[in-house]
Length: 63
Image (cartoon, rainbow, N blue to C red):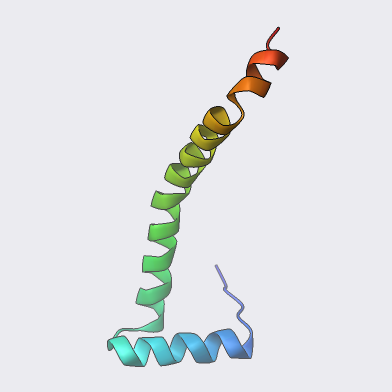
């Protein structure tokens, strides 16, 4: 797999890696793991909000 970043993204990633004394690869891999874990949780939260906030509309549509 190749990951193509803009010059600005690469520079920001490099700075962060230096600040944290980690490799750029480690930071990207951690970000990916975090995203993969949080995404289903965020989706479930969004669905819960729609069900709660639009309960009346959903009830009318179900008739």
